[in-house]
Image (cartoon, rainbow, N blue to C red; front, side):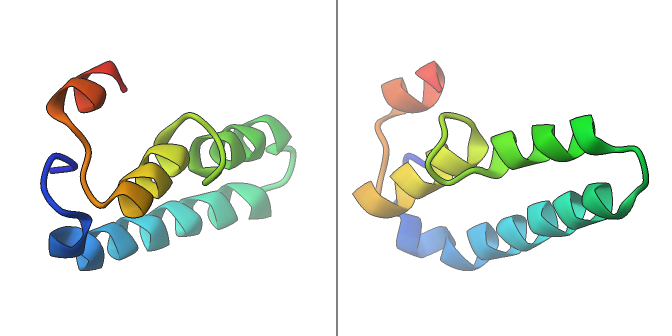
Length: 72
């Protein structure tokens, strides 16, 4: 999907971000769940190198090569 223009999938990406944020908030609200909450923070961090960072890169570049997608 990221090999296609970001604009073609913006609604889907926003929906995914919303679901990820909900999962993070749920983890954060559970008692004694610090480690899981931190893992969610790392995964969705838009400046990081996991899913959040990948989405940010796709949005910024507009499209990502298939090689870069495979490497990610």
